[in-house]
Length: 144
Image (tube, rainbow, N blue to C red):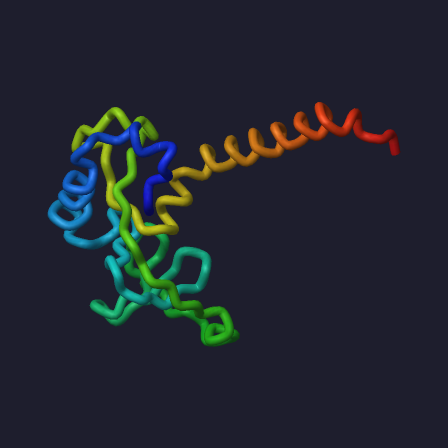
């Protein structure tokens, strides 16, 4: 995932090289959480289960091979296709901590799940700020 320009200065100058080392040398081009391959289109069901063409089988959201067969009922209607892109992520969300153990190669899905709490905090802050700006410039909200 690209780094927002306002956050660029929180990352080290050699971040592209560090990110490549984590994603391609250590993780060998696969998500470290679910094992999805980088720049490949994968079939998935939206709940974490996805088709791994290398093993010709389904995997769950943690990358484990599913042992039971999926039921065919409505399976074709649920299948979606996603192009996987790996990104290097900080496990503790601290961009100053670039230790090898703190960095992970995540696909989009796993990265969003990992950052869920931070995204919810930012969403709340944005909504709170918009409401405060409305109060400041438009007066109090009308009583209903």
